[in-house]
Image (cartoon, rainbow, N blue to C red):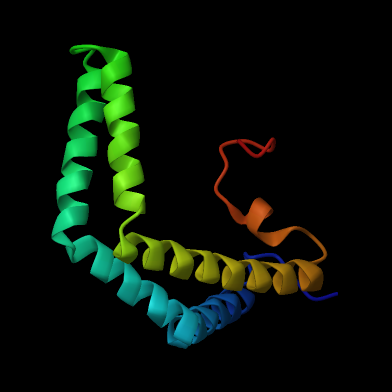
Length: 131
């Protein structure tokens, strides 16, 4: 019976090559490219940057117990609502949802082939319990 553990250098190299090929294919999809463009547009938008900085200021103040916690929390929520209402952020959220759907489809195919929930079991864990 062939050795199928990852201690087999040939198998490990093959898996690494195939994983890299899959990543390259995913990066080449229109869905991923649109996501990257939307992310870059949001990241470089001055209104998003300004609102993000204000949100961080309120968050930091809450962490340091400065001022009225409830007032900071409400201000932070209002700023987040304002930011999420921006067309650039709405476009980003739409593209993000599309790329998440694509990755979920890939996970479903791999999970079916492997016979185990792939993404849920592929994450790093400090113990056998999955945490």
